Image (tube, rainbow, N blue to C red; front, top):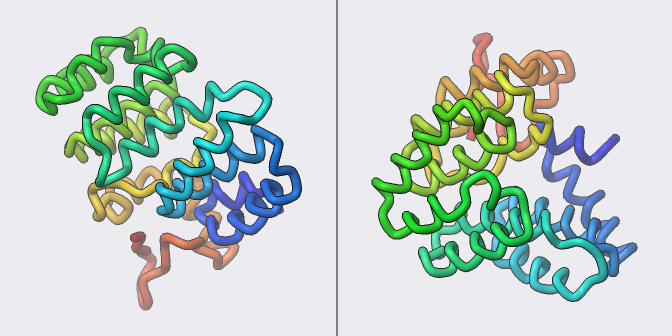
Length: 220
């Protein structure tokens, strides 16, 4: 079974074996390294993911995606300070799409959560920013700065309204530990057809489980 399908359906423990094997089989592949960085991040191993990211910078090939993903990894980290986040964001702004999405307008506000959130809300409403990728980043920054409402709205817009395809990113760790079990998050899963898949297959993945005696389910 394809590792992307496994990730999308929340079966990260199964996907991990496949992605790790690819990285071990081809350690000089920057693509295999990037996939392993994603998997380590999604499964809550940010230090190992950072070490793999540092290793990947010596590999041949384009590191643009890994540079941008490094920002998301820092956003999820409880240890990330504004200086390290700024440095990674500036690197990504030089080399990746995130710079085109947020640029210096957000970089200059990292030490002021209220200003950063105001900028994120403006970007959320900006008609020129309506892409699935932009909304995924809005969600990541909003969660980092403590606005779960905006994070959930941006997740819905990214994956349901705008048809974002990297659904596996929904399962990433959030600062709001209750976000996965928020009714609005569960509604996103329903609208994406994931709940129908869970019920038809009987496999709810690593994060969700049916509630005994009812039609509802819970996630963690």
